[in-house]
Amino acid sequence: MNYSLQDLKGKRVHFVGIGGYGMSGLARIMRTDGIEVSGSDMKDSKILTGLRALGAVAVQGHRAENVEGADFLVYTSAIHADNPEMLKAQQMGIPILSRAQALAILISGSVSVAVAGAHGKTTTTSMLTVAIQSCGEDPSFSIGGTVSAAGSNAHRGTGKYFVIEADESDGSFVEYRPFGAIITNIEHDHVQHFPTEELFFDAFRDFIATIAPEGFLVYCADDAGAALCGSETKHCRTISYGVHPDADLRIDHIELNPTGSTARALWHGRAIGTLEIHVPGHHNLLDAAAALSAGLALGLPALELMNGLSTFRGAGRRFEFKGQVDGIRVIDDYGHHPTEISVTLQAAKRYATDGRVLVLFQAHHYWRTKAFATEFAAALDIADHAWVLEVYGPGETPLEGGMGTSITDLMKNGTFEPNFITVVDAIAAEAKPGDVIMTVGAGGDVGSLGPVILESLAKRNEK
Image (cartoon, rainbow, N blue to C red; front, side):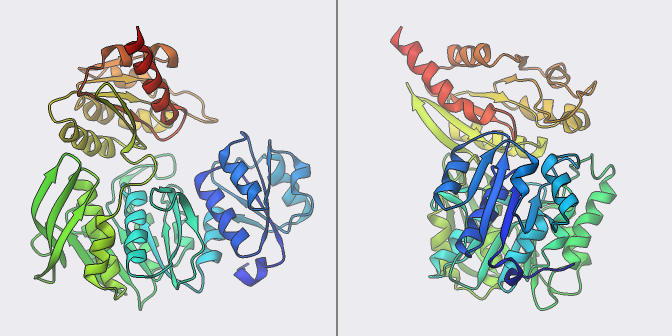
């Protein structure tokens, strides 16, 4: 059954797992829309505190009684079918929506742009949001990370545009049916849902097919997977970007610097200005080109779009600077796929200039570690040394060949260390002025260790 935003007005929507980035963002937007919100999460957090300040009822722990009085229930793929709140909603006949279905309701009626791809979604979505804002617009957005300039990952704007990050992990991004879309790249991942590469590509083809015929698809001409799907798309306008000579939005005269990059931007062969960003790495320059392409496809002015991109200072947990002690910089990054980690560490090497890059990594999911152990090892060996924690596999059974040692056994410069205290002390003892320490990983606690490392570095200097 299809629901509209009007169907939610005056009703109470309950979120199972409300503390997650995506779910909390939807909850905030619904509160702005005047919808009553409740939700639960296994852990209390600052996110829940913030939602309570907006008038939401957010509690710790999943219990059947939390659902009583709710009119709709929203869940994510991380929630199991035997969750007591899911079971209670089924018993009471409460309509149950996936997170993607709920977001699809919120973006209906807007000029929506969905950003998809194996890597770079959060950064590209954030860049496009900032670029549109620079044009004097107030777009709505829902992103898988915090936009540094906004201090939030979700916002109900007053304008007609709605920019969203489209998560491909379970194929649910076909629910969005956007006006326009960006495909940054397509590389096999999420093997528990897509055992073969062809199934993964088919999911993207299905997503592209939902783009409005009067809308557009922006895709990276430099990525073989995105370029293939882009070339197959006939039902809507297509726009390619990259360094490829035939790209509609081509970048050249590229200068990669330690803390940012510049390039000349050419739109259909005509130079339109200099694309300048203040986050490092060629991959981020491509993400900026994607955002610029989408902005141009929306009919927004090139100069204002590029001015906005020049102000972008990153998204939360995307090469995020956490602090510095004694000339040692600590950076946190969400990287969860070997290709992401590879390009991030290449950027980190440039960022470190004469210093070393030391990495603390935690893989996310046993199945991903088993599928890509060799690739993880090669990517992490780009660093001067990497310490690998045990895999974070929420609710999963450990797999032989999918553990932390499965990676370090294949590395030249890797150490397996599952103890958080020991590994923090080890990396702090090894670091020297000029080095860059990277905490890398999508789940678990690795993203919270940056401040702990900084504290350890400070204590080391006190001795």
